[in-house]
Image 1 (cartoon, one colour):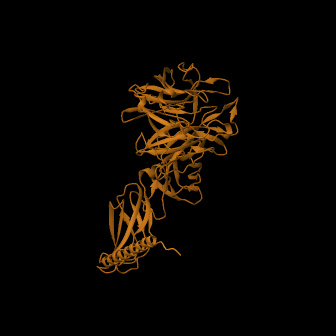
Image 2 (cartoon, one colour):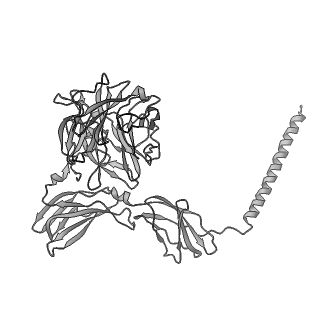
Image 3 (cartoon, helix red, strand yellow):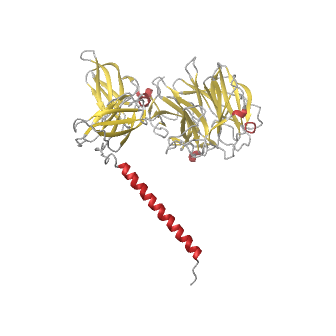
Amino acid sequence: MLINFNVMKRYFAVIIILLALIESSCNKMDSTYRDFLKDGPITYTEKVDSVRAYAGRERMLLTWNPITDPRVTKVVISWSSGSGSIEVPITSEKDTLTLIEGLEEGNYVFDLYTYDAADNRSVKAEVVGRVHGDVYESGLILRSVSQMTLTGNTLRIRFRPMEGVEGYDSEEVTYISSVDGQEKTILRKAGIDPELIIEDFSGEEFTHRSIYKPQVLSPDLFYSVSATVNIFADPAELEYTNPVFTPILADPSVIRDPLTGYFYAYGTEDRWPNGTNQIVPIVRSQDLVNWSYVGNAFSTKPAWKSSGGVWAPDIAYVNGKYHLYYSMSVWGDEDPGIGVAVADYPAGPFSDYGKMFLSSEIDVPNSIDPFYYEDGGKKYLFWGSFSSLPTQGTYGVELSENGRSVKDMSQKFKIAAGDWEAVNIFKKNGYYYFFGSKGGCCDGASSTYRVLVARSTNLLGPYLDRNGNDIANRGNGTLVLQRNAQYAGPGHNAPIMTDNNGDDWMLYHAIDVNNPVINNVNQRVLMLDKVHWDAQGWPLVNNGYPSFESMLKPVF
């Protein structure tokens, strides 16, 4: 047997080095352990257990199980990475809660430690909670009245169900008593028969509002807007049922005339069932519900593009005149573009100012679906539609002072990926909300169109969905409206309108699955639904689906 002594030497050298390292490590561990124990062993106090957080109005109630460790003298609570803190004295096992005041609305993580007189502390306990305020309260739903009957001085009021509405606690009703002529207020708790009987009613109206208690131990109540109801009014006058306009008003845009108070809505060029070709039909309404036909924005198509329909108009009031931004395109168009027309009045006549840009000129494929927005004294145009090409997406660019041309095409900026179209931006409570549509708009009853949202604190983005994902990347966005069994393809919403009660309303188009296509034209009817906002400030249109039953009308 041959032995390679050089190899053996190397093996022995490696073993000696390893033994030296182990000895050194052990010496270091001994030193660390001695340092650790130099002031004696660590003493821990009892940890705060079963912490609960209950939302209040700009404050938070925290509760925990009784602390049985007699050494504990206080609980120290901190939040916002230690920028805020309080100390809660513990004198007995009955000290199991505290109310933290002066908090801004939002989400919080609270860290809790117990301490003894020698400043020994427990391991950390943690609880997450949400503090409510004006944002939460502005999104609360007012319970609607479905039926009223008056017999003598006995008024019977039946309210619509509120099952599944989180935090709903009771209904407050105020009326004038027939006994002494004084104002009287009564509460109807949730879960009781929806019919309220008032036996001493007088007059013609009552006022009611809905009361919310976010959690069972929440220290505060929150209130919806109030509504005054005339008992002799026809309930049908207070309600509406979708659709709000037929036969077609696709890709709607809406504006309110400040002089007359009328709402004017504009739609994509379409051939109606009566055979007429509507080149941007215009309709008007006083309440967003009852619409009447006005005419067309154009008597003839704009001539700056040889072929194409006038699609997805966007109406805006710029420098004292009505500007109608529009797309010119055909299906599969390799070079669609955007133009602008101007009028003194919302009903027109509109004078075409021609092309603003083609897709090839601004290097954004499928340049359609314009949307105008003014912010900080600057005018912007946003646009974009579906594409998988390298420069795809929804973009924005600053406009010239007159709003009819682009200031510098090279300064465009991207805010969403090419799986979005129909951008519409709405500002609320410090956020810019990007509403847009995805899916197929125009496949009759099989249409998959739907509305999603993201938001930003800056108009120029980035826009993030509820999960914190940037919509400049494909596949992101938070769903707010999708099809149901009655209506397919809800989408391409108009600018959100706010009524006199502070409620927000969305107009959009959808396709009735029972009447989807006539003469090869999708029957995209005009729809209206209320936008609800949750405690975190995220919207939901109706209950996430188009409404088809009677709903309370906007108040204007």
